[in-house]
Length: 327
Image (cartoon, rainbow, N blue to C red; front, side):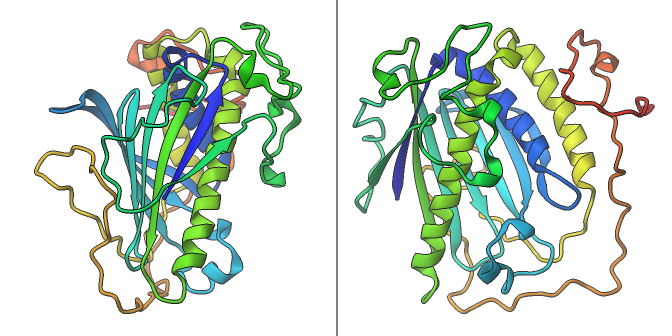
């Protein structure tokens, strides 16, 4: 179990919109035909304990992003399911897949401080020692394939907020400032692979979260003036375009869903365990004769938000050439 702390040059109030914008744009950028993040469900949800929130279910297709040793034992096409309950400033995210006794569980809390709250998750009983990792969004290394000079916070300066060009020790001089506290639990209870897989997954999660928090601030001039209604419309239109960009592929495996603890769809309080046997799985091959739907075209058109009586227009970084598709 690891607790990661990400400090940003934003307030908790501002980051609520920045987070939604970043997740949508990042998912779109990282998706391509057959790979990426497909949004299955995204709707308001009311929880008796946490109040109003948003429930999201996604399918993450990532076969080509796995290391060679992992690709050798998984089907050619597969996805993991991510379910998230966003009761901002508290969120719960859980993943489940076909792998035996494999689960990822992330709890997140946001506070307007520099990471100084050592007991933010004190109300959650833990059976094991937690490793705390402070992540510097400006000076910690990210994978080279994700590096962009325009997103390097050592050189980026926001025109609208006048924040940026972070120097060493920046967290002690910046205002406003907030911290994203994340408690990450990874379980892969398979003898001989447990340590290797869990360490690998923790590193991947850290890299993804580091990149996301960098982008949330590097894109601040794109979202800082948005209202919640505008960012939700942007989220809807971008998700539609991303799903088209990925294309529709029939799953080559069965996904084992972890049941929720009650009849309601509230977030689990602790990391779920995938209810599979302790024996190694018999990995399934891709059916030879299974028909496939036609994948997304190379040139895509974002849905026109104006069809739903919205005045919001998408930023110019979406540069499709074709005309809007009819309803």
